[in-house]
Image (cartoon, rainbow, N blue to C red; front, side):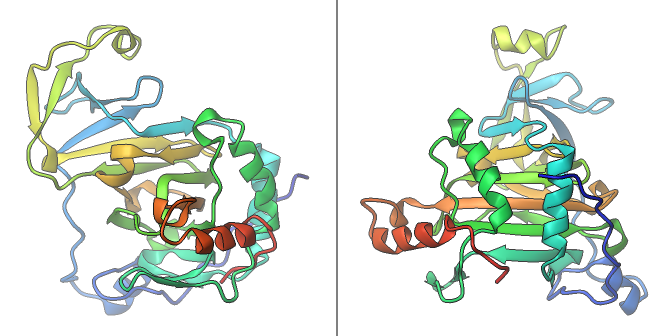
Length: 302
């Protein structure tokens, strides 16, 4: 891919917020003290270290130096080059962006889906965009993604001037499969993980020399923290690829807080089929058709 300059898009004067969702644009329009106050931050913040797979208590916090394993996260840095990043975003900006919730804009390349009724339509779906062919091919070079075949790509555009964010949520598991794969473009950010399950997390006192020391062995748990009070921050470098599986995919909600969008950020998220749509599943024929369309790489935003 050739190098190309990426200009920030014009800040929108309208928003796509509905219900309790808000952004800076609609908050300014409504004025006054908003009754839709943003949810409070979690009490205890831990930082995820990709080289160990552990989450460690933030500095100057009650749990500084305490840690617990946080499985299901794979982070691949510098997945694309600066030149590839610039060209990808330039090609995205040639297509229309639709207004979305919480100050985001989006482009969807996938079937039209009603998750509540568990129904989908392939009409109009022509596949992933042509510029993603090389991205998908490159994913297959990594063991965790060697059999990854995406059937949907969702591009999200975040901008600090709009107060862009996305609330804590779990992705659907009826249609979408085990791995969620996201490519982080234009600026670094933080993915915030939280879990509403009851119970506690068992912590180990991180030994001196962390994070290297934790690779060699696990110490006996000696402290605990309520799960509902914990937030795990996963730093996402610019041009990195994130893969969520297992507990990180199905049990921990993920979010992007407004305070972590300091410059324009574009995220391309790729999703695969669930077991129901894979060979041997109840809707395997529909799944095969979705894959055929998706991997033709002839798509336009839906």
